[in-house]
Every structure is written in structure tokens, then in C-alpha cells.
Length: 203
Image (tube, rainbow, N blue to C red; front, side, top):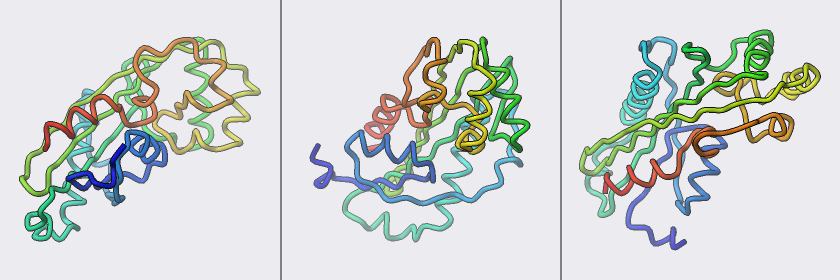
């Protein structure tokens, strides 16, 4: 990948390590800026609408902090990539667990059942102002997850910091993932194909 000579710059508006890893795997170099927004004050009925609204809010928050003149003057465009993700279980939207108890309940719910992730990607071209976003949904089916595995996951703690307490690539949970209808990168927070498509369109 000739990422170093890429004719545009990317700002990833996310603090997620998984998203960083995926964008790097795609061959892009990028800088990171995080949007400190109160996600709880944005509510939508449909999960697809919610993740799109949150990606927009993150983009707006980051735009406020960018010296906008520079991006318009720069020869090469800068693309801002913002994302959001929620888990949907039996029609209800789940965000990051608020406690260990809630995370435990979430995992018990998934055991022998299924959930979905709905993730958004929004690309804003800071030079032209063009903005395009879309969402991606993945269905995940689980085998029965033993209680001791759930306890180990809670103790280890990663599940406390992800939407719906849902992780599929974690070595403890991987053996209990029955089927994934969609792509793992999407579940991890950044669907590669969709991101690639939006980057091309934004240029």
C-alpha cells in the first residue's frame, strides 16, 4: 500500500483501538481526534437513525475544534471519518453497559440467542464540505455461553467498554460464536467495504 503518498489526509474521529487497527489494515495513515459529546442526549427510535445522528454529532464536535481555514487552503483534501455503533437485542438498543451487573445480564441474554450490531460511518471532506454516511448491520448468533466464561469476561473487563457488552473476536467468546451474518470488521466498529466506498465518494 502506498499510503505515504496518498493524495489526501484522514482524521479518524474515534478513540477506539479496534477502529484504528482496521483503518491501518486498510492501508491508510491517519491522525486521531476524539469528539467528547454527551451521547445520552441524542435519542432516536430506530438504531440506524441513532448511529447516524451520533456520527453526525461527533463530526460537528470535531469540526468546531479544527482550524477550518487550513483545510480549505491545503492542496490535498482532509477527510474526517466518524462512526458510532450500537447493539440491538430483541428490538432494544444497547449501548455500553453501565455496570458489571448490566454487562453480565447482557451476556446471559446473548447465550444461546442472537443480537445484531448496527454501525455507522460518516465521511466529511473538510475541503469541499461534502458529507456522506451510511450504516451497516450484522447479525450474530451464539451458542450457550457458560457462566464461568461470562464471569471471566466481566473480570477481564473489555466487555464493559463496548456497545452492548458484545465482543466476538475475544478469545474467551470466540468459541461460542455460532454464526456471523456480515463481517467481523463491521462488528468491531468499522466496516471496511463501506468505509472504502464512502472515502472514494467523498473525494
